[in-house]
Amino acid sequence: AQSVTQLDSHVSVSEGTPVLLRCNYSSSYSPSLFWYVQHPNKGLQLLLKYTSAATLVKGINGFEAEFKKSETSFHLTKPSAHMSDAAEYFCVVSDRRGGADGLTFGKGTHLIIQP
Amino acid sequence: DAMVIQNPRYQVTQFGKPVTLSCSQTLNHNVMYWYQQKSSQAPKLLFHYYDKDFNNEADTPDNFQSRRPNTSFCFLDIRSPGLGDAAMYLCATSRETRPSETQYFGPGTRLLVL
Image (cartoon, rainbow over all chains, first blue to last red; front, top):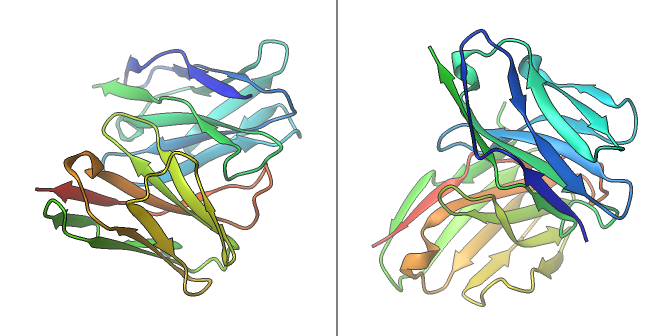
C-alpha cells in the first residue's frame, strides 16, 4: 500500500523568502511523484513530477523538488516566494497500478505569503 | 487554451433534485476521471473511464453515476443530492493510466445543495 504525508497543514512565509513544503511517501514500488497547486475555487495545476529520471525536478513558476529515496521524501522548494504563490499544494504519489486507483493524494499544505 | 472544461462553474440544486455536471476535453485523452473535493480536503476519486470502460471506486455511493458518450465528453449525474454532497467536483484527464501519466484537471464545479 502507498501513502503520502504532508508534514505541515499550513506554512507561512514572507514575500521574497524561501519556501519549503515537506512531503514523505511510502510505496512498495518505484513510484511517480507529483506536486499540484490549487488556487482558491480553481482546479489543480501540475507544478512538477518525478518519474525515475533526474532526482532534482524543476517545475513551473520557479518551483523545484528533490526525490530522496533514502529519506522517502519529495519536498517542494522555491528560492523566493511571491504573493501569487499563496494557494493549496498537494503532494501525490502514483504506484504501478497507474493514475486511476493508483493515485494517492496528501492532505494538502496551505501556503500563506505575508507581505 | 482551455484543455479541460467544466460547466457550470457553480451549480445550486435542491435537496433530492437530480443534477448533471459536464466535463469536456480537447486533449483526446483516453482516460477521464471525476473527483469529489470537500472543503479543506484532498480530492477523492469517484470513478473513471478508460475509453468506454467504466471503473467505479468501491466506496462511491450509488447516488453518483457517470456517462461518457464520446471521447470528449463525460457527465456526472447525482440522482438525489443530499446536503453532504455539497462539494467541488473536479474532472481530470490523462492519456493512459500508467503511473507516470500526468492528470490534467478542469477548473471544477462547485455544487451547493439547498
